[in-house]
Image (cartoon, rainbow, N blue to C red):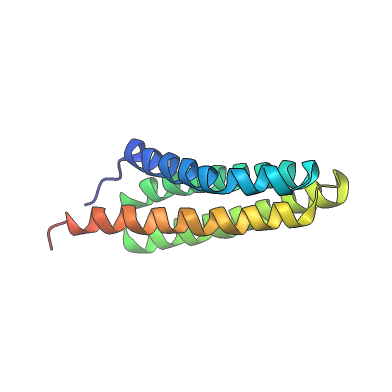
Amino acid sequence: MMKIDVKRFLIYALVAVVVVWLLISYPLFKFASVEFIKSFIVGSLISVINSIIGIFILKQGMAKSNKEFLKLTIGSMGIRLFVIAGVIFLLLKVLNFEIYGLIISLLLFYFVFLGVEVLFLGKLTTKREF
């Protein structure tokens, strides 16, 4: 059975976030409006929280049977998707956040964390004995 080192994943995720923010900071703060920047920051925080919750759920699922693992991971993905949709609706309709900054950062960091998860789990599975 594979064991997931959450601390190591968090380090990978932190490095990815820092790299992305270093790359995006100058154009973001030079050319974007304050509303766009605020929405961008909130979108990135939503993605960070989603990824951290996801890795904890994945860690729990690794100790379960394949059927239970799939139920837990797919079920949590659906729940997290609906929660994020609700948060986006709240931010856009109630708090009047700027849509483009929010959506761009959500998508950008979604793909960044997807890459981190694939790299992390890929390294983890290559250490596994078959």
